[in-house]
Image (cartoon, rainbow, N blue to C red; front, side, top):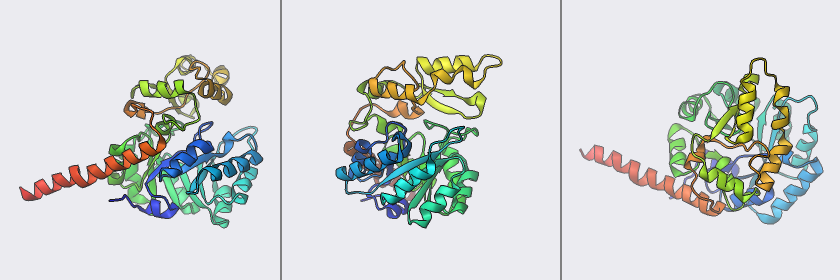
Length: 330
């Protein structure tokens, strides 16, 4: 028995499992491995230094898989923003048919992608923003709960509430993000009204993830308490793994009169990249979610996706179905 949903039909994949776009991690090796496993792999556009580098990475991914894959384009407010329009053009010109957007005011990008026949999945952290994106014309929503790595928003709504609340109001397919790492989570997401799951932290702890083995083992050894919330004081909350760097960021931010400049040297993306690539866990931030408490091994992407789907199928067809049968029999 397969798990076919509106989302798997929309993007042409076998299993309702998506690898989220992750800075420095969403490269061809990982995206291709997830797509080959029957899920949807995602390249991260801004991991590539230039739009031309992104074109080359898309081409490289195509040498590794003939299955559907997408590209993430995250739009963040900045004094000196990257050339988003040029990255968008690189995605379109390369013939990519699936894009995950996230971040600030994506309308210009969504309109251009849609005009070129690209399927757009927009990631957001609130029902109101999901409805806004639906009105904007996106094809699917990735709803991101408070448990997630990255930026969970400022409303602090966990997936158990956020997913069904969004499902009650959206008409387009929705996948669930934040806190997912096994078949129990997939079955729960489907029960709550989602059409699949999006996983970031869990895919970091796989053989194919292009990060240092010490970082993968760090995620395995952490539990569900192993995160810090940072930037809350500056209304840009982020959830990261608990390490010496994020502990210092929390401590400095708690000081009276603290401003962002006080922590800027600690939180640069370049330092986070050093941590991921060298395994020096004190070099920078490591972005990871509460799902660390459910991660106990470092499998291949194929083994992970197959295990998750198999577990979800067993829960739905056996455990839950058995409860209904027992109740009817009684």
